[in-house]
Figure 1 (cartoon, rainbow, N blue to C red):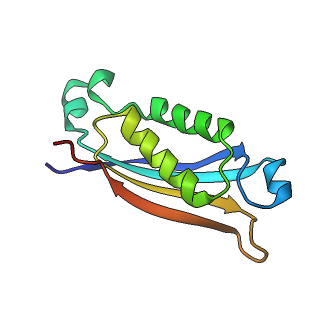
Figure 2: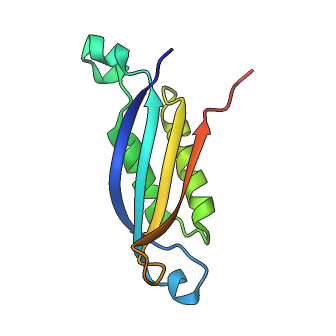
Length: 123
């Protein structure tokens, strides 16, 4: 099966992340970019949302998690967000997720982590 790419670009959410004392109390911008791999052909044929990956629902879950969580490390947050994508939508087979902290490093526009994960196989 050939998989298509659903793009979520430049999702900017204020949240708590980081290890420094000021990062634990002051929200900072967290920048999310995601690629969700799924077969979009059923929705293309039926033109029915029930046959599509509802990326709005997935995005709302990502936002809620960022707003409610307070991880120390970007490494943890990016994995949690990937897990949410798989939990929310069984049609998603692979996720590439980037989480960045704009302005976290002096002289750098941003610093972040990019991971790619496949849906775990169920036996």
